[in-house]
Amino acid sequence: MPSEHRKTPWWLILWRLLWMTIGTFLVALALEQFLIPHRMIDGGVVGIAIIVSHLSHTPLGFWTLLLNIPFLYLGYREIGKTFVFSTLYSISFLSVWVTILAHWPPLVDSYFLATVFGGLILGIGVGLILRNGGSLDGTEIVSLVLSERLDFSVGEIVMFFNVFIFSAAAIFFSLESAMYSVIVYYIAYRVIDLVLQGLDEMKSVVIISSQAKPIAEAIMARLGRGVTHLYGRGGYSGEDKEILFVIVTRLEISKLRSIIEAFDPQAFVTIENVHDVMGGRFNKRSIH
Image 1 (cartoon, rainbow, N blue to C red):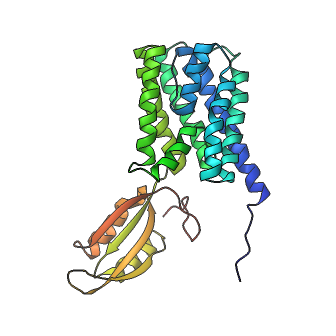
Image 2: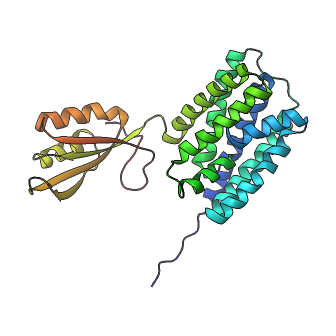
Image 3: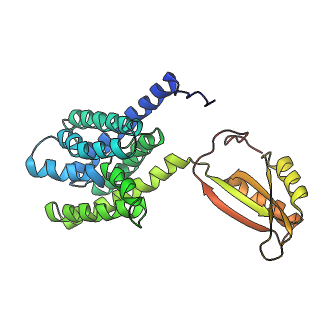
């Protein structure tokens, strides 16, 4: 008998919509108060909308919504209605916010301050939207679809689009504006990662050792982290191997290394970044 499909609780949906609304306000604030007054743009469809708005002397909010409609239709067909609804919600509120904030005077006159703080605020806003299931950029939808058909990653396709967008900024604004825009984009990109991953970045660690049991006991005792025991067989030696899997924070990596080296300096260890953890007993805020 198939399991019953569980719907997302209404309070969680409202919570995500609230954060997406805050995120769209921050993006609009970065655009209208920092970037656009200094002739800088963002990447993706928003960047195209800024250029078209500048050339046609028409509201940015109108173009932000209009230019994304074809991408939303594509996303509905290829990805799903939940993602498209969240994206439409985010884009609609962004259009409203930029229309309101367009009448406010710029907050700073300095190109340097506009670049740094514009990138920071933009990154926080976009990060909040992405973290709660929304999106502002139709080129990401195209990239997701094309990545399944072409031998390129989503990031590579997005970068391909942005090369042309920033080149257009150099033509229609100035080379200096385009170069500042690239710096803004880089700052925002790094801040988005920070918002999505959190300050306390997590790592997944795989340990293969003949001393697996005492190492696991030490990790649980000294770090307070749960350890999963896996079993495999060496491809070369044919010997049975006990494998440990554990999730720790970035700050706990040094202590974990010390534990492993104390029991088995020859242990084989791999460490990878983890974007998020759900379920289990993992608690990012615990201190050991």
